[in-house]
Image (cartoon, rainbow, N blue to C red; front, side):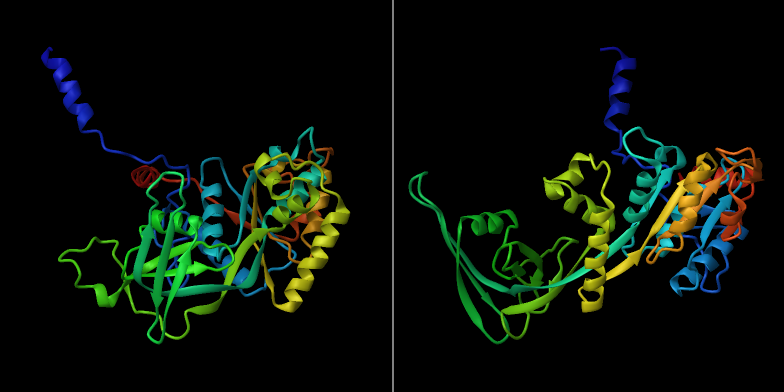
Length: 373
């Protein structure tokens, strides 16, 4: 082996594992102080001080419920961080709220009409936080006993002893529960919860009474108090789904499996009306909350006059998401007409739009962005 190949092997052995990142995966927020003043470099964003401050006030108004029936337009030259700013707004807004990012050219498809594509995008951006109560068993594991059969054909049998500060109970384990116990590596001293409906076992941590069992503990070790009260408890669980998910599940024979196939196709308006009525009933009964999210449409000047008319009407609907649009055009024709308009958007929609302007980056800001990336 020559010296050159030996050096190459040495360099290859020093390769560090890296994670693949997205274009805007480093953005965590708008980088504003408590006084709504943007810092020069913060939370993955660099520069664009005026645009970030304006976006911060828009986010504040949205959270206070003072922005209804309006859209946000981010306008600026190519490469000035319009998509990054929209991502930052989505991060600031996110309380589990869904965010849909798409390009205007995705609206046009031979499979579905433009109205259907826009409707699906809008309903994909509205979340439903469903609340339900479930019965769980929560306690500290005192003993786990698993009896393996002498032959391979026999079934395993097991017992699990759980306790709280007030009581102790022994449970018989079935085959699936035994597999879950082995998979989660449940041992004496663990604090666990068991969902009675599904049989799912979750390990919460270790009991404080077992903190001195070992001389050294890993960084991931978590010690908590032994639960008090009854072993069986009722706990409120929340699930977040979008209106589009519910549409697909109720409009296809294969149910929720249609979510994975991606073949949603046209969804009848009757189905959506029934779902809207049911969600309204859940909201009145306190079973669900409606969480409007964000729909970001890039290159919005690619939409035609019919799409703009549809969006204009959709903004007035109840529980409409916050629509954020981005464009790099100035005065240009509205697609489908011969009319000139700022940013290629009809004036009636432009009048109800909050506009944020971005500025070109300086050389120093571009260097900072490359360092962060």
